[in-house]
Length: 431
Image (cartoon, rainbow, N blue to C red; front, top):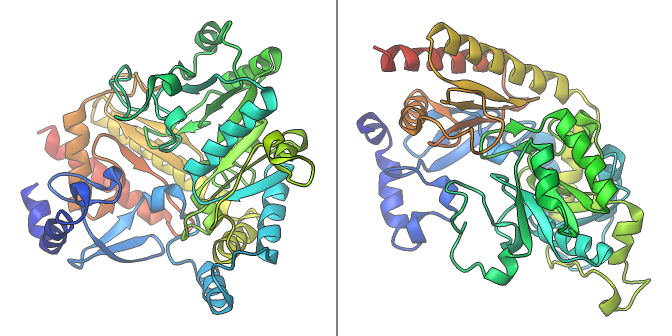
């Protein structure tokens, strides 16, 4: 910690100033770590520079949204051109059509699409749509899965799971949300029995809580269970969408949901964005030309699908649809997982790596985690590892567990650098 403070004195000054105007000194609690976070001045490719001039190898990449690398030139160029033409018009424009079209081309289950301003908004509107379609109120989500700050889904996110995820959540809302065990199909079946659910929502890969993937057979069984009980299945692909494959986790796993939600990638990784889409018979409940307002599922948003965001998103997806990115980033993820497991094995340390494709995380646990409960491990060792990484110019999230999402801008040498730093950390900590 002392070395960290010596290296980041300008960040400390900025944080002291931030605390005068921002609760906790940040705009989002996940950005904070003790005694203060770094403050970033610029980013390019796989690198980030802080205000003290330290250069970091960035493995968090804007919450996994920066797939092609920071300041990716085609997206920056498109955004600059659109700024000259108008960023927020309040009217229809061609880029919202282009964005919707390319999403429907890439994602197997999405026939119709609507844009939102964030993944949280996308999940909020998707839940409303599922309730409207099924005419049922109760919903279900999984332990440890994060779907944004929407009240109905802000439940059982972090341990202790029996405590409220936030103050201000009312009993009437919480009682309509059933919490399910991840990767446990029989446990799910027992929990949903007799509940008459509108939908079940999940992250196919539990993201910021440790990049823990769903078992393929679990997802297939969940799909069958939802069909059996007339429950809509929603995939939250805010992290996995357009990252695991062109069609996201549903293409990767070969399991199709009824509704899919998306996040930051739809803004090119640089503008606030989200969206949701699904089957035509479900999505047409949003069609204002077919129903009076009290007969439809409302969706809106002043900035939703604005031309600046939509053009940036379309430009990025136009690159990703070519498919060249996925062999590279997935190979980087595989190299990192195998390399880290080898490091842990040689040092005989209780640690494991989870993940799939380009996503991975380190857990200092006795067994390889399959859910949020088994991901609870040696928090001191995890925290020490996080700060060792920081002091050796590697950025990941977060102190409680190290989560990584490399981009096309990363190289095999970057992965080797990560492995080398982890090796050195274990040498020092095991002395």
